[in-house]
Length: 402
Image (cartoon, rainbow, N blue to C red):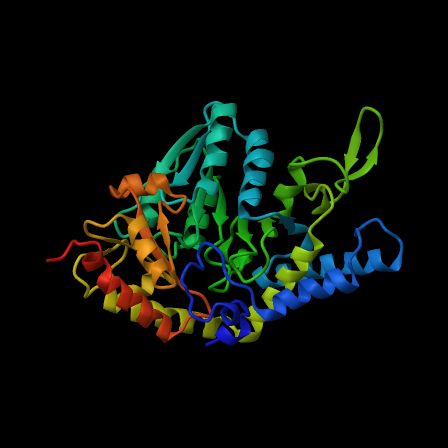
């Protein structure tokens, strides 16, 4: 569909890249935008009064405006730039969690969470005495709304959950979850890393308190991420990092902090990354999410239907391809996932193997590790054909058949 937009496939024409859930490839328009910024607008932004600094500041803040519009936040003050989704989630855990949680409180976490939305809360729990509790899903990855309602108590202060699982690929009903949480006086922090690049996300419609995502999974450069937070919450939260740019006035013994969102953006910021993110948003908008979803769902269904017919292949999660949103995690009987990935690599096909930063989920499912293929805009039917053809040979090549 759009492979010609991505220069890496000109450099590696034989490669089938099916690891977009780990990181996406970058279209030419994104790499051009970043190169153009460094060639023609590079300066330290925000406090320089000369022309180049003003241009850099405008580039940075224009990117923030683009993000606001992309996820339909109310204000640019609710958009904090970070290094990645992991830093965004750590910001919530440390800045909100350390200030608002104490002994007797509870943190509820969906068992399918990526470690980035789990380990920070473990540390907050250890330091504050708040208790970690887990919401468990079925083998299909589904969390019935009633199970969330039953898991919440008067002590539950925050619920951590992903919108689209990086293992199951399933879409959680975040708006319903948010309404249930808010009825209970509980905040909800949502990991949007796997959703924002693939489906339209409206933070006001979702009614989430926090949402985190990374640029590098949505065709933007590595090193730029976003935290959306409701303004009234961010206003009350202390800075996560301190130093330059996040202050207004500094005296010997005290300092006053800059206004939102700058109080959370200490040090020299990643303007080039923000420019790349802006270009990636423009790229996705030019295609349109209707086309994005139609393309990715078609390829998911094509792969899923053929994988189900291959002896020894076990798909993790729902039995309906439509529930997988471009992510199919699987095992092959009697073959370690690392061997599966190695065989695919020998055929110039990139997939991922391991626990996908979701070890508690794998233990819950009783599966030590899995293999995962994940789809992006640059994939096509020929990629799926090559993937399926190699998958059919795995057991034979490992000496498991005959």
